[in-house]
Length: 283
Picture 1 (spheres, rainbow, N blue to C red):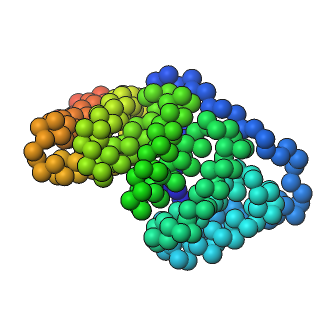
Picture 2: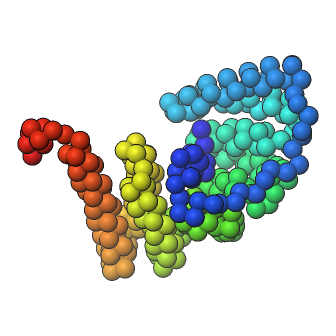
């Protein structure tokens, strides 16, 4: 449900330097849940899935009472400081953010961050996600001064825990670029965008070379935010900044070339599997 969640699954395992160390979870209860707790947690999971579906449909008002119920169940079954409670806090805060209800979202995000730091450790990637969430709230409010240190800390955590070329690092770099763009600090924005684009290109080349067609499509879809940021920065400068213009042009052409190369490789693999007669028809 949280659009700012970290990259996981197949993509994380395909990265260069994939021997990434993620700090272990510490300080969590080890006693198995009782039968009643297990039943309650299963109900929370069901409600969480329903809320996620409503979220995806843009039905935020309908999703809020479900998310509130999930939070209450998990607090009772797991304790107020469990990491799953932090996840529920982030999701409920997300719903408030999409409604522009910053007043109710902020204490939830601060509490989720505190739980993450306590249960996972201050340098865990999930803590970086909570930092990003809180920073995003401040950006919505135009409070860039408080958002900046949170985004910088999130970037430092991800670089250390995940490696400099992880997709989540690229996202953090883009987040900082957007922050500086909003303040009209073009030089800083271009610097962070360039760094983020370099990481994205590294991973895009890896995935286009080794990933399945579905994996390629999925990863390309995650790059739209960076392209939007580059073009937005170009429009903001009204075409007067040659460095921004060059960055926008290079990004668009490079991405277009990557896609065409991938299509060409796919077509060549398809040809190799066809009979001579089918190859003629393909030509």
